[in-house]
Image (tube, rainbow, N blue to C red; front, side, top):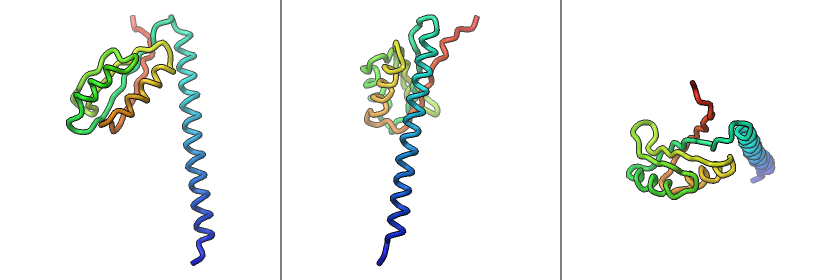
Length: 124
């Protein structure tokens, strides 16, 4: 059986997926640089972000406990609602926040995450 065209399409699709992943990585890095730049222009306050995690059933408390050990995590709580665990992260720069979020997403039992970066603007 001749599979030449099929293999060619498959290679093209794989190359497309790889290019798309690289594009998303590039956008993420650019976004983090922008946030870091804007944060640096602010009054020198620490960057605060909130990490919302969806975890496997029964893993909520163990994930929260492990989160508290990560650098920059000032608080981690089990919550009710769409997400199961919420963590507050304080860091001096976006690179540390990114490292902490990446470590948190790799914790056993974590299935989904969403990161909210505080604007740092205080209403009066």
